[in-house]
Image: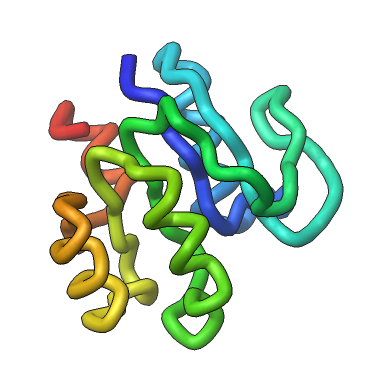
Length: 119
């Protein structure tokens, strides 16, 4: 199963990152929650970005482009196979950096991908 890092994880049930964390967990995907606030989602603690992971398949973004720059190195050094830019997170500067590093990126909705079997 594709281990997924949710960047912008939230304990707020109205947030899409919350819904995605729960859906991924229900479907058996291992998740890592990274966010700014303390808490847990889908039984997994939310942690702050620190040392990059080495076993992440997908990073799904829930951080707006205006707040992504501090995460660039973290994302690039995690070396995921792909990054999903969810609606409202699109960022051409980060997409260019990912491409230069050989990391695939797509603009899509993770929830829709999970619901339609495209994940």
